Image (cartoon, rainbow, N blue to C red; front, side, top):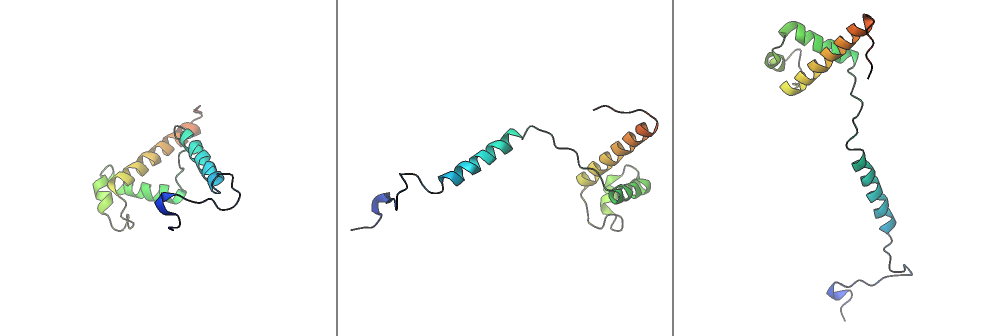
Length: 111
């Protein structure tokens, strides 16, 4: 007599044919469905810290638009941020400056 042979499993206890972890699986499925439904929603963009803005400003003051030189600068870029990463941070920094200037001039943007 082989125990559990042939791929058959014996139900232990009075489970009524329902696996004990089925409720947990259902909860996981519901969480995944919720995440999937939110996939199209845009997150609020990350705001740059004052320190990050100062860092990007120093890079731009020194190198202008030469992001390649920014990447190679070991003193101003000690964490060795990539060209793409620095480029994104510069775009975010410029957008923030533009918004601040328009706000200071009394031009209030509506979103």
